[in-house]
Length: 292
Length: 283
Image 1: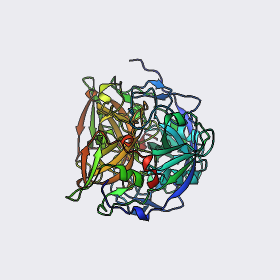
Image 2 (image 1 turned 180 degrees about the horizontal axis):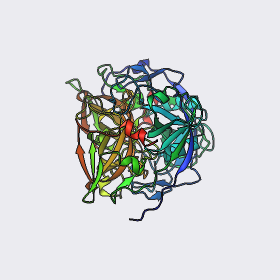
Image 3 (image 1 turned 90 degrees about the vertical axis):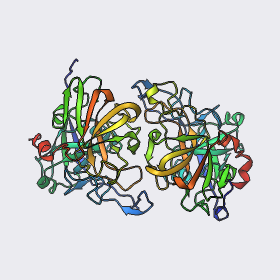
Image 4 (image 1 turned 180 degrees about the vertical axis):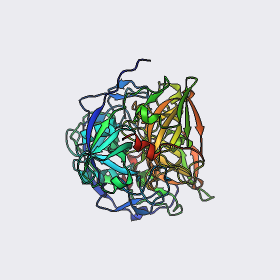
């Protein structure tokens, strides 16, 4: 992105995390939009064969978390991990047979989510340690002080198309525009934590549930209309938030594929350009690692 | 329509103190810090019929919030308690006095109980309250609609009437599902939904505690979520909040396809749950 920022002022921290197991309770089932019970994989562990650029929906899954789901065992250090980690940060596997393998952060979902090459990911499992090189919180755009940036690594900012226009707006390329009716669970929560579930993406279910969001992909950059996520996630006319889709298929009602927020500001400060290539898979984030 | 009997269960709950973290500040939607007042606990001077915007508070509910210290038991207390249930104080200065369940809030966290003001003044956090819970599973007056969180007797106190196989409902305002914030995607037997509105939102300036509101395109039978041409009705049970994504709280009581409802917006004249009527039912 062609934009001036304070990147040279940012600090980098090394953070430890651990691949966390999927969790269930003894009753197992949850309830879908039609009241039917389901028990499906998705959250926690290492979820294979879903990477950036792949469809977000169309799986028999709930709260699909692509790749590694990472947290820290202790509450305080875990919040440090969840809040300070940014999309595009580099990740290294620090224990187990895949020690030394590398990947990058695609978002948060109460876990930090990590994508890496599929053949290397197959050797990673619950309990494996990872090390995250966290940088990005505090990032600010010099010529756009009204836009708050968060959860966005310098690598991601650098790789995104667009930038400051001659008219002074920030041009951001997005794969999809999200109407405010789609905002589900995550509303009212801190926008440095987890993500915003989008409703209206229940592929294959009733038509009256659809908001036309069934074709989202993991890693898509999206624009959320009438959302102010500067200090938490809220509905606010005239504001726009930019996010990256980090989770996929959901059957739990009121939930769905979710963007982690990276920018939020007045709608008039953005020039939104619809562009199918606005997806992390086109950004070569592994090659940009030296910046993060 | 078959009509199975409802089961009543006596529950034990405790008057809540409310909690504040080790940092006194929360952040409002403009990024300014504030100290939250009235978020749980015993709140004096806030009454049914008061404006949801009339006090400096954060999620302030009228009366007393009651909780249970064990998480699982607390979820049951919140899930099973219904608007209109009797709540009898068992300990403390006001032992023997009664209140009535008015709503629920948070993630299976708190039941809101209204008491006469002279009783409320004598409450102390940790006082024991017995709630005679009854109402979950009650059938709605019209087939195709799901009823929850309210006893049939309390529903009869509201402007809700059956006519021509539809439910006629008088509400203060009808709002779009896009205004639903915190609580969306959560089970409605446990949570309320916050409305992301302020006093400048059209039709909302007169919103009062105890009002009914209608929310369009919201299916709230289990979790609350977007479903086109559905409608949900709820009782406004707590006041507004400065936090982004939060606002006046609604305990959902009815949900179904919009075609089963005939909603009448009564922006200036609406009369929802009245304190004196609700409390008289406990006697």
